[in-house]
Amino acid sequence: MTDAAGSEPLASGFAWPAGTRAAACFTFDVDAESAILAIDPASAGRRSVMSHQAYGPRTGVPRLLRVLDRTAIKGTFFVPGYTAERWPGVIRSIRDAGHEIAHHGYLHESAAALSPEAEERVLVRGLAALDTAAGVRPSGWRAPMWEASWSSAGLLHRHGFRYDSSLMDTDRPYQLAAGNGASLVELPIHWSLDDW
Image (cartoon, rainbow, N blue to C red; front, side, top):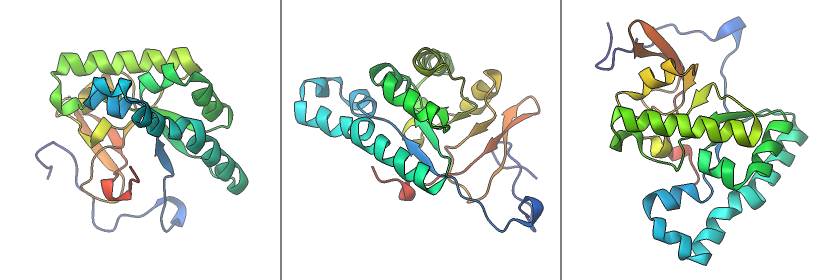
């Protein structure tokens, strides 16, 4: 049985590999100014707001990198393309510390508000920005504002992504249908776990 999106539900008796009892992902969204500018481009003229949004790349990321290094934990940083263009040195520092850099839109656009064609343009623009800034090709994606569209999984598959981390329907990974028999791994997230 599949759900409305064509995804396979979790089987009862789900077991983690090799007897592992649980798993956790340490993920961070490096939105910086992109989230505010996507909502209101006029915010660019608001110095205090832009200062607030710069806290993440300027102060938060370096602190997180030190904590992750000290605890020998590897994390995933979801980065909008605009952030990569604005803060390339910060994005390279994440890469150089051995952490995964994943895709998070270009200007933190809601995929649900875009046509499939516009969503693909944003996806490609974000990929180009991450490549230019840090020479990375992400295998994971998180929808900005957790607003994936019904087209997102198919577009991600078409562009070589292996996983999505945008949906909130369970607390365990599962196969997300991407159309034509293809699938991605879904690593569920929930906005109650976010600090923004």
